Amino acid sequence: MADLAIHTEQLTKMYGKRRGLAGLDLSVDTGEVYGFLGPNGAGKTTTIRILLDLIRPTSGRVELLGGDPRRDGVALRRRIGYLPGDFIVDGKQTVTELLTYLGNLRGGVPRERVTTLAGRLDLDLSAKIRSLSKGNRQKVGVVQAFMHQPELLILDEPTSGLDPLLQQTFLDMVREARTAGQTVFMSSHVMSEVQQTADRVGIVREGVLVAVERVEDLRERGVRRVEIHFEDPVTVEEFAGLPGVSDVTLTADVLRCRLDGRADPLVKAAAKHTVIGLLSEEPDLEELFVTYYRGAPDDAA
Amino acid sequence: MMLRNPFTKALWDARRAILGWGMGIGYVAVMYTAFYPSISKPAFASALQNYPEGLKKAFNIQDMTSPAGYLGSYVFGLLVPVLLAVFMIIFGSRAIAGDEEAGTLDLVLAHPVSRPRLLLSRLAGLATAVLFACAVVYLLLLAIAGPTKTSAVGAGHLAAMTVQLALFGMLFGALTLGVGAATGRRSAAVGAGVVVVVFGYFGNNLAPQVHGLGWVQRLSPFYWYLAGKPLVNGLDLAGCAVLLAVAVVLAAAGLVRFRRRDLAV
Image 1 (cartoon, each protein chain N blue to C red):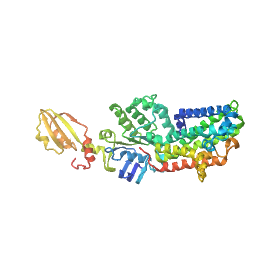
Image 2: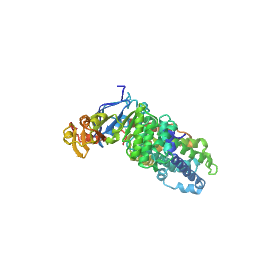
Image 3: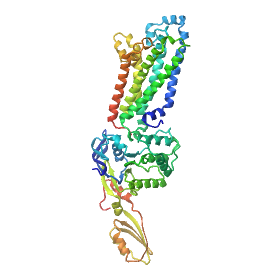
Image 4: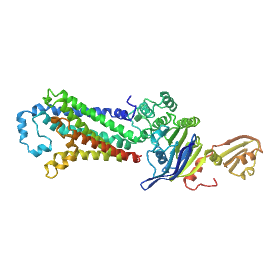
C-alpha cells in the first residue's frame, strides 16, 4: 500500500451517541488531487482531524503516508501541510511572525518561498492578523499549508472566503503541487470548487463514502448545453431522437440542446451538414452530486 | 529569536503578563516590608500581644517583633503567595485549555509537535514566569533589607523562603495546566485552582485550631510552603519535596489524559 497516500478501512467515529463517521473506506493515491465532497456535517472535517491525530477514531484502520497517525504522528505531520476549515490563530501577532513560527516548527522554511507565495496571493506580510479580513486570513492559512512544499496537502474547504481571482490562483497552486508530485486531499461541499483540479472525487454522506468517481468520467456523463451553428437550415427531427440529446430547439440555423453523456452521436449527426461553430459548455457536475447528496444515486444520469 | 519553538513562543506571547505580574508581586512585597520599621516599635508589638491567639493564627501573624517573623507573616504569609497563585491560575489555565477554547491549539498540534512536547513547553513557560516573579521579590527584598531593618534574616534564608515560594507557585501552575490539559476547559482549571487556594489557606490556618482536624493542615500547599520556617531555619527539604512531587504528579496526570483525548473543535 506504499502507493497510497491516505488509506482508511471501516473508519468510525462516535461523539458520544452522535455519529461522526460510520465505516469510511477511503483510498487516496500518491500524487493525485482528490476532492472530498459532501454536505455539511457529513464527516469531512472529522476524517481530516483523525488523519492529523487531533481526534482518535472509535474503530477502524488509518494509514497515512505509510504510517500510523497515532504512533508516527510527529514524523508524519512533518510531511503534511494542513489548512483547517476554520483558520484560527492569535490575532496579536503579525503575519510574518506567525509564518516564521510555524515554519520553525517544521524546521525552517526559506524566506523567499514565503514572500513568493504571499506575493502571488497579494497578502501583506507586515499586517497584524487581527486587522485582516476573513479572506486575507484564509490566505495566511493557504501560505502556511503550502510554504514547506509538503508531500501531502490536506485542505479543509480551502477556497472559502477567497474571491474568484484568488480562487484561480489557488487552483493554479494546486495544479503546480500535483506537477511537483505532491498529493492533494481537499474537502468541499460544492463540486465546482474541486472539479477544475481534482483527478478523483469521493462523496461522503452521513459518515460513509457513497461514491468515488474520476472527474473525467463524470464530465463524460455530465449534462451539458450544446449550441451548433450550421451553414444551412437543419430540421429538429434529425437531432431530437439521438441518444442523450434532449430539449432541442432550433432558431433559423442555430441548434440548441442538452447533451447527456457522450457527444459522439450528436457530432456524427451534425457532421452531415456544414458546421460553422460549435459551443459546448462545461458540464454541470453539481447536478450529479445533488443526486448523491439526496441519497438516491440516479443510475440514468 | 523568540519564534523558534513552542516554549519561547509562549514566553514571547506572555511577555507583558510575566513582566507585569512579576513587578506587581515584587511591588507588594516591597510595600509590606517597608512597614516593618514602624510595626516593630515596642508600642505596636504590645498592642498585637493582646490580639486573641486564634485570630493571630488565622492570619498567620504571630511573631511580629523579629524581621523573620514579620516577613513570614505579612509578606510571605498571605499576599505574596496568594498573588503568585492567582497569577499561576490565570496563566496555567490559559496554557492549554485557553488555547483550545480559543481554537488556536489545533493548528500547532497539526504541526510536527507532539502533545507531550507541547505540554512540557507550556509547563516550562510557567516555571520561567514563576522564577522571574520570585527573583524579582528576592532581589528587591535583598536590596531594601538595610533601610527596612530586615537584614537580620540574611540572604541565604531569604533565598530559602523564595525557593519554597517558587515551588508553591509551580504547584498551582501544574494544577491548572494539568486540569486544563485533561479537560480542555478553562473554567474547570480556574475552579480547581481557586478551590485549592481558598481551602488550602483556611485548611492551614484554621484546621489546627479545631480539635481532631490538625491533620487537614497537611493537605494544604500553604503548610508545605511555610514548612520549617525557612526565614528562620533555612530550606526545608521535606516541604520542597512535597510541593515538587505534587506538581509533577498533577502535570503528569494531566498529560496522560491529554495524550489520549480528542481535541475540541
